[in-house]
Image 1: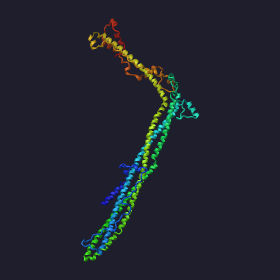
Image 2 (image 1 turned 180 degrees about the horizontal axis):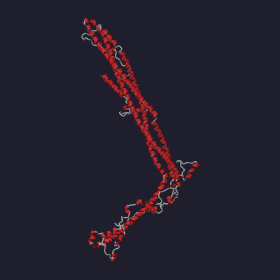
Image 3 (image 1 turned 90 degrees about the vertical axis):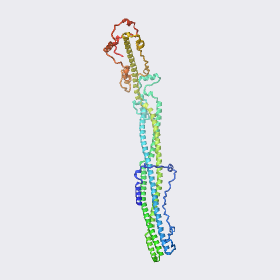
Image 4 (image 1 turned 120 degrees about the vertical axis):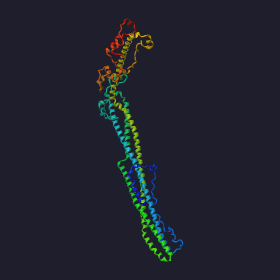
Length: 596
């Protein structure tokens, strides 16, 4: 029963060792010593199993105790009794040797299993380290690809930027061709030789030229507005930084190539790990097959020796008892043939046990040697993995530094884009000047219209108040003017806002519509040259409901309102002449279409 359960446990253990379920090492936690992986670390110790592979120490005949007398009252030594004791001690010696071999088989098998399981742990630890390195490699490869793509895009963009920059700063298309004929070339980059790319071929508007002359400078083209020396010096610094970045990128790419290695070397190392795992599995299978078989055989042989010793003890005891009985003295001599039969039946057991113990000792020695080699290989592999991970970490750190440098270089290169984008910016500048001038004109026009509308509204209010005061108001008592509505007889206040001065209109150059017909660029719709037309084109930007005329009423509605609210009375011209200046006739109100 115990043997069968032990075999079942052995079989389950054989199937579970180095199984694919733990190939990633995710179910285990491993701690690695940096000191043990250093270059000056000592070699791992040689593995030795207990018991050692040497032959077991066997008991001798002198170690066997003298068997007690069969009859305690008769302890006298006789030749027959002495001969029987020799047989009994020999059987006792064989049983002791068998027990030594059986116990040794159990110890050797347990030591081999433990050693093989330790090798399996080494394999699991190596799996975890390789898996960790694989994650580092995958992350480094992804980082390398992303930065390579980012750097190559920036390099291509900067190359074209340098090319356009030099084309913009060339004086004219002829100067570029002359530069090529003379064999000279700019240090910034190649030029395209297209006349339209040069800022010197784009003239400034005459109003801008006049403004420059007023400031004491001579500017006739866009190139004159560019500080050439400063721009070229800055471009030279950017070019030097670009070359340094390219060199650093090549070094970084080489560092990645060295840290990541090749797929061939990686596959060779992985195949070597798999071969070692297969060797551990094979060794474990041999231990479970050969070791268990020898252990069970040794146990069976020990059982036979123990049974023979028990039988021999019974035969000797019976013979000694027969010797004391005079009637059975002759039967005591018949014990020797039975003992000889037992001795012959177990004569081959001890040599067989010794032979199997030698086989098991050799197996334990190979298991110990395999663990020693596994530890050495593990140390070398872990050191390689540690070096690779350190190299990958350094490369990733270099990527971070180089990415910051690339970002700074992009920021520096943006200044060169000002020169490249200057023609388009100049076109938008002219359009912006025209739009702002149109805005100023529209603003002044709308403000004047608003003031005029407010003045008309006040004039109408004055007439309506005068009509009330000359009509129903003249019948009111003083309390209405002094207590109830003190402002009843006053005129509406004047509205005179302080409008901002349009200084910007005077400071902006008058590019007008002539520029759109003479320039190299097209700025959209062309005007008639009148600023009022420009104001009308920009009026949509400044329209506001409060600036529009108030909703008008028809003349008939005005008359009905006047007729219903204010009964018609006879006019008194004398009173009109004597009325204050604010008092005017309300009859003219019907001529206006605006009401408040």
